Amino acid sequence: MMVGAQGASSPLAFLLKALPPVEFAAAYGSGVFKQFGSAAVSKSTKVIDYILAVEDAERWHAENARLNPRHYSSLARVLGGERTARLADGAGLGVHFNPYVQVEGKLCKYGVVSTRRLARDLEQWDHLYLAGRLHKPVRRLAATPAIERAMRINFRSAICA
Image 1 (cartoon, rainbow, N blue to C red):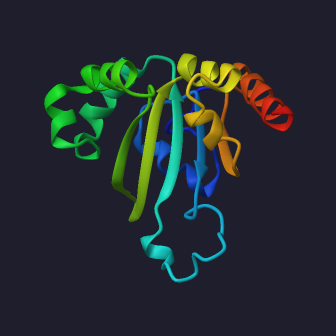
Image 2: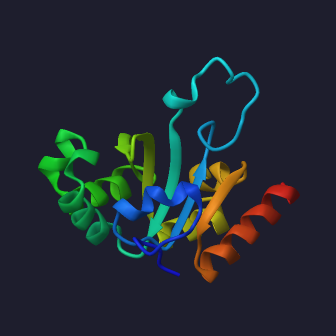
Image 3: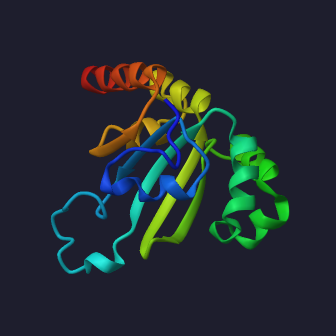
């Protein structure tokens, strides 16, 4: 299920309308869920965090960098979308985050990972970074059947660990 401008009807789907289509989207954190001790932070300063999975991260970042160049750091703009994705995949955990992005007057941070890499972390806990994040409360906006299956494996593994 690809979600783009036609996307999900959730009030949190506003970000997806500004981006190329994605295969998986989940929102999380204090900008989505009320959290104990966060009352001192005003609602207007809370960041809405997202994890997005795409079939081809290099192509997705190349397209998104053309559509939304201000979402990327100056280094990522110089590298270009394809190299940014390759760097995240080769030197990091496979996810590239664009922080402090303003969309429709709301502050967002979104991380983009390939569906292959996300499924592998959910099923095998390669790094447990995304799998661990998805153990916590998230608001799912879109998911393919393969990612839904990997999420169930991740939950079962967490319960049995």
